[in-house]
Amino acid sequence: MLNGILWVLRSAAPWRDLPERYGPRTTCYNRFVRWRRAGVWDRLMDAIIAAYDGDIQMIDSTSIRAHQQAATAKRGGEIIVSVAPGAASRPRSTRSSTGKASRISLSAGQAHDAPAALTLLDRLDPRTIVLADKAYDGDVIRDLMEAHGAVPNIPAKSNRKWKPCLSKSLYSERNQVERFFRKLKHFRRIATRYQKLADNFLAMVKLGSCRLWLRAYESTA
Image 1 (cartoon, rainbow, N blue to C red):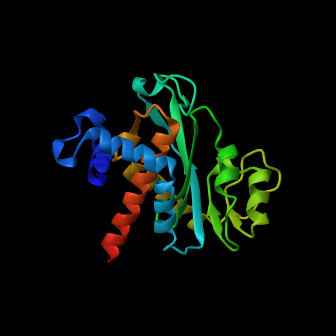
Image 2 (cartoon, one colour; image 1 turned 135 degrees about the vertical axis):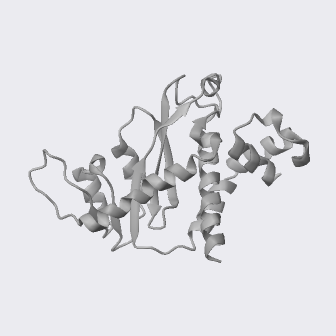
Image 3 (cartoon, helix red, strand yellow; image 1 turned 45 degrees about the vertical axis):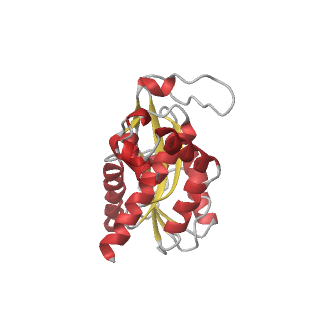
C-alpha cells in the first residue's frame, strides 16, 4: 500500500492507473487520505527530522504550477480550493543545513513570503543561524528570530537605512535550498499540483520530503 502511494507520488499518474501489484487503488487512496487526517504523515516527518541536530536553518519558497484538475473541487466541507487554473501555490519551508525540509507550509502563489515565515520560524532554537534572502528582510521577521535567540543572516534591502551584519561565506550555503526544491520536484505529483485538496497536496509534499530524508540516511549508513 505504501509503495503504491509512493508510485503515485513519483509518477503523478491518476490513482485509477495504479498498477494491480499494489492492490486496489481505492485502498491506497483512502489510506493516504485517512492517514493525512490522522496526522500520520506529520508524525512521520517529525520522527525523521528529530534525528537531526543542526545550528543552521534556511528558509525560502518556490512556485508550483497547478493543473486544471486541481481547481474543479466543490466548495464546502473539507474541500479547499487554494488556486485557480494556471495559478501557482507556494510550499514554503525551513531547511536544515543538510538541505532537507524540516517544516513546510502552503499558501497562494500571489502571497508574499513574509507572512508564512512568521509561522515557520516560531520554533527556532537559541543560537541558531537563519539564512534567507532579501524577501525576508523585515523588522518583524528579524525581531522574531532574535526573540528566540537566533541570529539572522539576511542581506539588507536597498531601502534599509541600518545595514545589519552579513556573512557572505555563510550566506553562500543557501544554495542548498534551491537544490532541495530541485530534488523535491523530481516527484511529479509535487512538480505539478494535481490534488484538489490543499491538505492532500501538502501531505504529498511532506511525504516527498520524508523520502529525501531517508535517502540521505541511506547514503550515510
